[in-house]
Each structure stands twice: as structure tokens, then as C-alpha cells.
Image 1 (cartoon, rainbow, N blue to C red):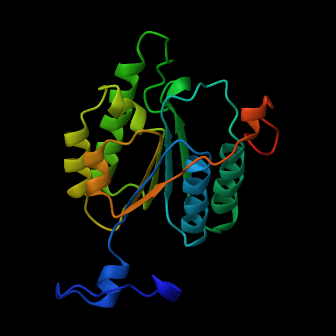
Image 2 (cartoon, rainbow, N blue to C red):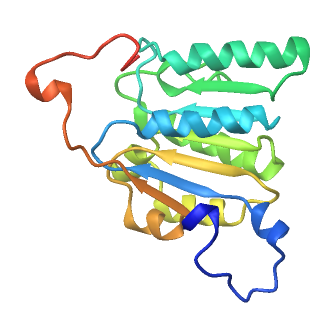
Length: 204
């Protein structure tokens, strides 16, 4: 795609503007570092454009402090107080989804994941957010907690211009086939390979 130009323009009758405003489904997968980081970078751009941001973190423990969560909380506050950017909501399965106030448990992760997906489905139908990050969402699909075909069907039928980014390793091939943008993070080298632990400002 040289200089941001498409290699070919499909004969689908759509205008350039219509294609530019089409909702995007992106998947960041692979064994390398940076899948969530890249998704939050896209969310930052969307926030700057005034999009309503919805982040839904699957799998991560409530005890894990994510640096981007604190940053986006401040951005959401900036929007609320000064009208800059867009509104932000951040939900984490491990702490009990905020709309249900149910605390997560070690034995009920599958039910919690299904609850999260059900809420996302409702929000998509309502066009609640302009930009969704479904962080580590590939794992509930891989483990069979959420049906992949249902996810693809719901995302394909979403209305408006709602963009969705899904992150996590081992994304199902059917999801990759349905996506508009797929990036695979391939590890070439990692500090942990030489025994170094995660670092402040790098991993969190």
C-alpha cells in the first residue's frame, strides 16, 4: 500500500468517502509482544477524533494494573470536564463487569466471559461506542467459552461505523478471514528469553 494508496479499487459502486467511513474489524494476534499496545494506540487516535471508546478486558486479573487504563481514565475525565476528545469506558472481567457488579471467581471465568460478550452484543446493537477494544478476546474463543461463529455473525451485522479491535494469541482462522485488518506480532527477541522480568514502563 504505497503512500497510503490502495493497491486496487474494487468495482463495488461505493464512493471513496463511503469506504473510508466503513466500520473496521481488526485483529492483533501472534506470539509477539505489542498486540494490546497497538490496539490502545488505535484507541488513542479514535479518542482524539471524538469517538466514544469502550474497552473490555478479558482474562486479565483485576489485580494487574494496566498503565493504559490509568491514562484513558484521565482522557475520559478530560472529555467530561472540558469536552476534549471522546468519552471513555473501561471494563475488566477480572474485577467483575461494572454493569453487573458481580465479582469474578476462579471457577466462573467462562460465565463471566459470556456475560461480557452478551453486554458487548447489546452495545453494538445500540451503537453505544464508536471504537471497541476487546482485549485478549481470542482466549475465550479458543477455550470455547464464547462461540466464534456467533461473534463473527454479530460483528458482521453491526450497524453504523463502529470499529472493533480484537487482541490475543491464537485467533481462530474464521475470525481472521472475517477481519478487515489482521496483524500478527512475531517475536524475534524478548528480554524474558534471557531471564529478565517485566519492567515498569514497558510491561505496565
